[in-house]
Length: 232
Figure 1 (cartoon, helix red, strand yellow):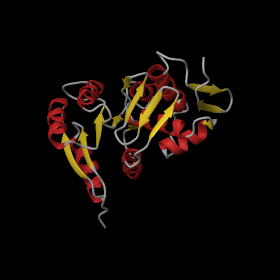
Figure 2: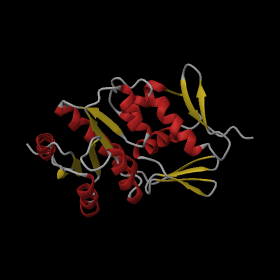
Figure 3: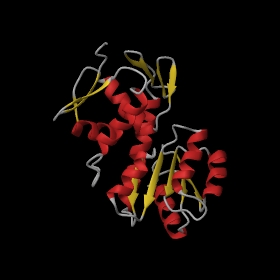
Figure 4: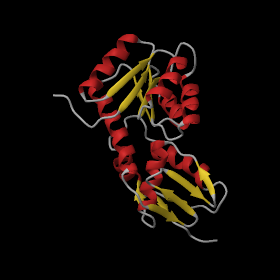
């Protein structure tokens, strides 16, 4: 049975067999899909197709996958990007996530897990879009409907996962949130081999949120993290 209510996905992979296999699996889930075998083709297709999610092989024939992601984010900073790689190293996944990706999976893929991760990424994006209020902590404001974040009059550009993490922290401002709770509520599945995931994203948020103002994201050693305005 074909599922409904899915979105548009662009799969960028020069491996035609993998490209077709994954697109076929997503089509059965109700997704509209397009394929591209190079960065050049992907850029043009993304501009016309306007995908909800882009899945990119880290190794492309004409460009580095991270370079393609940055070009896509120049046009749409909040576009979710998932990477595929054959390099089965935690360091590779950390490098990709640090660069701004929302997820990373290692080939060969377990197709049901791939489909589940794509579905979870879309669900997180739509949950944020369906909430209209603004969240405020100190001089930091997050607008859920427009997915815009401002602090002190300056706009802060966040990736989809950075936004989801900050939204959950701000929605629970003043409460200490354990690392395990953040993994469950933000990522919504177990992330194997990524024990530094929360710490990595907290560090990225701090560099964007706290760089020009007093810290709002605090560590409670041995427990987790809390967002609150502690004054001067």
